[in-house]
Image (cartoon, rainbow, N blue to C red; front, side, top):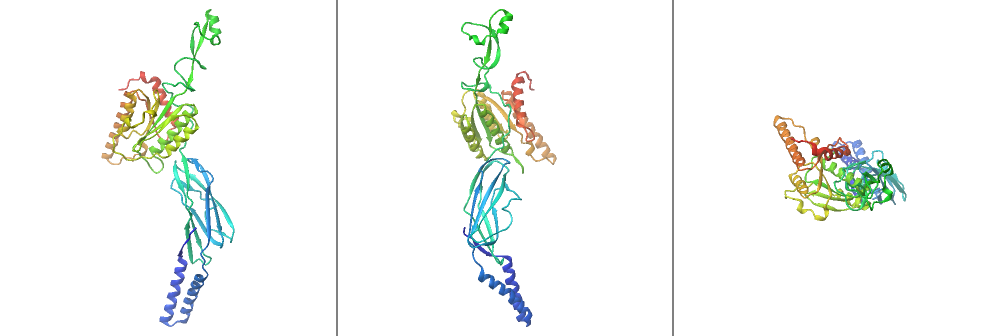
Length: 428
């Protein structure tokens, strides 16, 4: 590590005081003033002659470089010197989204004997998802006389990936159509399975093991059980990244990414195929697939999600067709702030996709209106959002509003209720 040297305030003060007293002694012919000045100047001269640039080697390592929001990891520091250090302070440069523990052993000044190695641990706590650089490590060394400060930065920079926080969903949105492969989703059609669907009279070719002997005995005629097969589904998470409202603690985009990670993990646990489309200033996608590897592919894609201002009109024609397989359930997670997203949702529904919308409510992030004009504009904005929501409902797209003080599973249950009772509702 190359250390830069600069004088401390002590050296400047000693040199200034010594010079002032010597000049004052000469001007006023006072020997005692000159003696005081000579003492300070002599201290500076001795410090300059004995000052030695220290030799310092610092190595850092992360115990875990893949975390979830709110989790902590340990950053280990190994400091070694061949000259000895009386006063050493180390600081790890971290982004705002990662904070260091106040009680970690790497805080404060330490001393290292010649040829010794000192190991320190610094606790780092993640605050939000993303990909971050940890480092460099800044070292400040002060010589034994306190006249010089040596400062340098290590070349070590480590990458840590912080995944979005995931909620555990006991149940999510049931897809309207299933696929051919085996899974945990009960198909609406009847066939070989384990989920009871009903009873019907026996027909030639039916399997004997499916005979319902209780009903057959009571009706004096053979009847068999009908079953629903368990299949998998294709789910595409449609993430809107056109715009974002935020405050000092959270934002609509942060909430949307957390919801996308939660939904993705839930369906992959059920052996469904899950894909991702990030629809915004930058278009990103991940083809539908299943398994734990797909989960990490989607999470890595979510970590690169950010809101980018774009004035280019985009429709679903820019999305590769392979990312939207037939009969797929499209779960759109959006604050519904951009007309391009609303238009794309209508187009997806018009092409026969099973579309549902989780609206990340931006109302909590909007500033409270103060003047009468601001209150009127706020009411008009809320009414416009109601109109957008009504247009989606009228097109047969269920919409649920999810606020940051609400559990995601509650919002998803509203969509299930809409699917069950929506045709009977009269929206006016």
